Image (cartoon, rainbow, N blue to C red):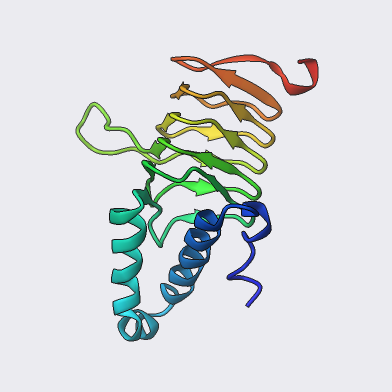
Length: 167
């Protein structure tokens, strides 16, 4: 039961975030077995309808998400199912995280986001990149290159300002 509520505290005073993360954890649990997918198919469709279509948060049930994910102002949020998100991360509205199209027409790998990453509003993170632990990405940034741990990145294209301890 604690699995379902592992994001509750990180979304305190944000009932929508709590509800979305509870529903996400439940569909992730259901997704582990073909039998449960068949039995709970109506719930899987309800999740998709409510979370994706009504609330505008694309958080596919197969996405790998660590504990303690915070969703601030969850609207227009798109996370590709191949994205890996670490523990205690923050996602804000109008953020897109996913793969990008290669020159040969195929799609590359999705970003891997470390622990304790704070992603500002209207951020785009695309491509086969890695975001290190304890990173802050400023609002409106476009990240197409890896960011080392303990950094602050801003801008379009995103550039590293300085290590967090130097600011």
